[in-house]
Image (cartoon, rainbow, N blue to C red; front, side):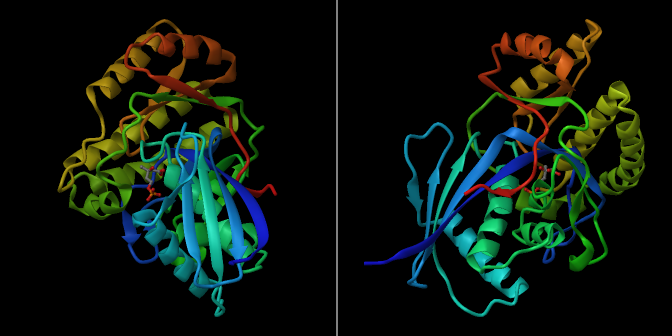
Length: 336
Ligand code: PMV
C-alpha cells in the first residue's frame, strides 16, 4: 500500500496579456523578445492538489477538465510534460533526492482555447514542486521557475494584479513583477467562449516559427514603444488610449502568427464577427476593446462601470456560447 504524507492545495490564475509574448530569444531558457504586461484573472484559474507519496516511483497526474464530473488519470503527454518539468525544477533548485507525487489538477475554464490554461497550470505546478521539495521560494525565484516550465507566460501568473515580465538578458534576470495590486484599476476581462474545442497548434511550436515572419522585427520595435506608452497610460488610467493599445498589440501579434511559416490562423469567422461587433459597440459610445491570445476565443476588456452593458450586448450574439467575467486577481497562492 502506497502511503500519502503531505497534501497541499495551490490556486493559480490565468492571465491576459495586454502586451503579449510571441517568439523567444532563447528556446532553452524561455526568454521573450520584449517585455510583456498582463492582468491576472479572478475566474479563470487552476487548482492543483499535491499529494506527496512515500514511494518515489509513484508519479501520477489526474486532470478534471472544465465542466467534467470527475478527475481522469493522464498517462500520456500531460504526464510527460509534468515529469520533464519535475526534472527541470529539481535541477534548478539543486534538489538531488527523488520524490513521489500524485497531482490532481482542476480548471475553472476550458483548456487550450486561448485563455492561458498553461500559465495557470504551470505556475500552480511550480509552487507545487517547490512545496514538494520543501523549498520556500521568494516570488522572483518562483516566477523564474514558472517560466522554466516552458510556458513563459506562467511567470506572470505568480505575481499579484497587474504584472510586467521584463525580458531580461539571461535566465536569472528574466522574471515578472507586480506593478500594481488587483485593486488598482477596476478593469474587467469578459472571456467570450466561442468554442470549447482545443486548438490544434500549441504556442510552443508557434514561438519557434515567429522568427520566420517578415513582420517580427517590425513587431519587436513597435512593441518596445507600445509598452512604454501603455505603462504611462496605466498610470493615468486613460482607458480609451489603453484599450487602443491593447487591440494594437493583439493584432500585431496575430499579424506575425499569420505570416510565419507554417502560418497560424487562430481566428475563426466567429472571432472576426466579435471584433466587428466590438467596434460597433464603441460607435454606440461604450468603451470596450478586444484582445486575442493563441486561440479562437476573444477577451473583451472594459471598465467595471460598463460591465453589465457589455456583458448583455455580447451575450446576445449567436457566436457566444458562454461568458466568463473576470476582475483583476492575486497571483499564485498556497490555499490549503
Ligand atoms: O506562455 P506560452 O508559451 O503559453 O505562450 C503564451 C503566448 C500568448 O498567450 C499568445 C501571449 C501571452 O503573452 O500570454
